[in-house]
Image (cartoon, rainbow, N blue to C red; front, side, top):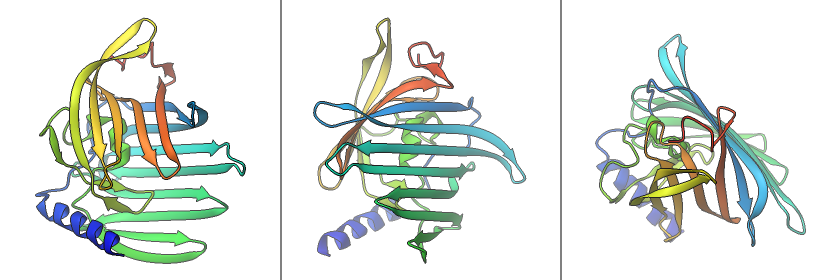
Length: 255
């Protein structure tokens, strides 16, 4: 309980120090649909897939950015563990305006529906046919999905201090969590046998000192090329396969 209280206090302090919401926003960039394979185990082997799409669209309330994500994997244990989630975010010029998510595992389903109202998100969670509502600050609008395409964020991944507080909103969890971001370097990344690109190497630290590591393109959409993510199920690696249906090695968006 003490650990939970401490983490909540850290979140509150970081949110209070944030002068304005920071997150992925509506930008006039080409729509992109990213496909990944997910690797897990020792040695690493494919266990699932992920897709994340960013699409600027016209709505009755003006231009919006829609972010849609689907993730599924099955871990080959004695009793296979299957997980799947779907998410949809709508972003305006200020940040994330609303999100809807569904996650399924072990025969259970969790649904989050949230809308930004002033300084807060109003979140309704349905789990096992029971509904709960809560409010969380809208001062944290930078989501984990935004890291898949830094070009749609209000601050590029290669900007800002080398080491900084970097809280993230996790729509599937229906809450935000403290993080720190460390920009390691800009280094070559091998996309295919005959293609290398410059990549922003970023480390995202958690309060327990575990870290995720990301490689994103420097130019344009700042597309995620690879992510090494620490999870409750162990290390999971995301490798980019294609952009808008074209292989990463041949895509014009990977430069």
